[in-house]
Length: 123
Image 1 (cartoon, rainbow, N blue to C red):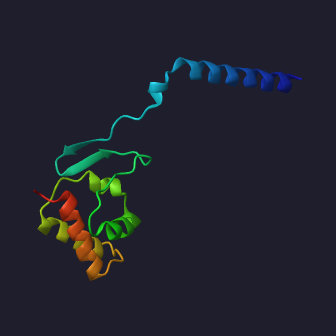
Image 2: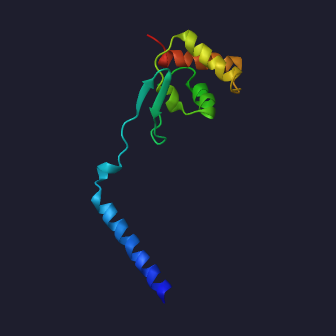
Image 3: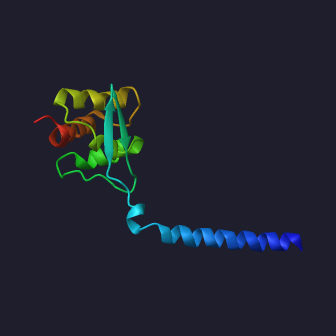
């Protein structure tokens, strides 16, 4: 008999906690804060949310960029990078192929680097 009352009491407590917890917070309390980042030395710390996909502009090479770069890491990571010169973007794409074995051939690598320069290159 004691076990039955314990289960009932536990169910009542959980229901009360759920009801009071849901009513005490406004809808705004569940909204995510905007994406932020801070630079600490040479390390970039990011606060990213997977349900907020980045929007990349249309330009030649976008399809290759979206296909290949999204295989290994979040495209949000790329959108948060500063604008780099063409030389840096070329080096980054080369590094992804050489060091991390990204499955990108030379033709697509050039398209991806050109796209990155077009949308995230230094003006």
